[in-house]
Length: 294
Ligand SMILES: [Zn+2]
Ligand SMILES: [Zn+2]
Image (cartoon, rainbow, N blue to C red; front, side, top):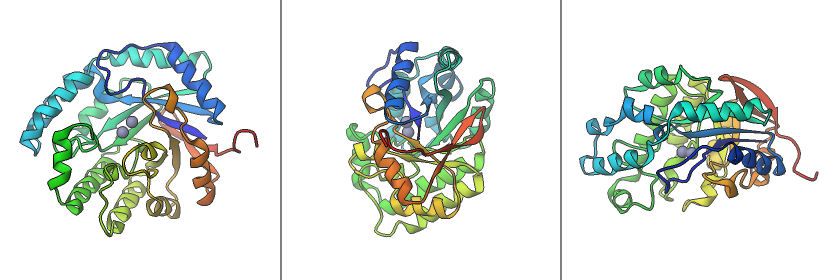
């Protein structure tokens, strides 16, 4: 098993620090759950270099009333030096701990070449590609009343269509390696009556891009109460031969490798025995492995 989606800091914290000890504790907890390798994948928008490059991108996006919220969100988060982050993770790798260097990258319409240019200067092992925002709407920030008010008024099929289009464009950009939480748009529990078209399109986006897809326990901790991806989307990935990673999307130690055994059961049910790891952006196979104690 892998835990290929891990954050160092909860979103509530603005000023944060980097510590080798924290990564060692993540490794220990992961290994106790039968996870053989972890990827540290902090949000790109945590880093000052991202703000320098992309800050203000929301001014061109739909959702004028939502732009101040996005600006405040970036101001709160973009506080860390990317070079320092890379140095700490590389130092832990050099100690021989089973860690790879990653990043969770958002989709920036029309700006992905610039994002790729920034990231090319660093020795990343794996880049997650995510869609958390539609225009200036941070649709997964469910504790923000302005975000939730949008969920009340928007047409659900239109939201899913816009999300799926962003996933298709993210895949076509070729910048990332893994689709994180592939059906994140269901997070609040709003799902179209017939979501099949969207599942087909997301699965095809993975095939066309050559990207892997993430099987994540994080959805069990959200209002939707379901793993990412939903069973019909996982089935489509498997049928099309899309490689998989497993992930917790933890933002603190207690959630590292969260419900790894339940993810293993889902993989067994789908007939999957091998996952995809990454080193230097190159894929390699990792056995799912037996449950701890088996
Ligand atoms: Zn995410
Ligand atoms: Zn994440």
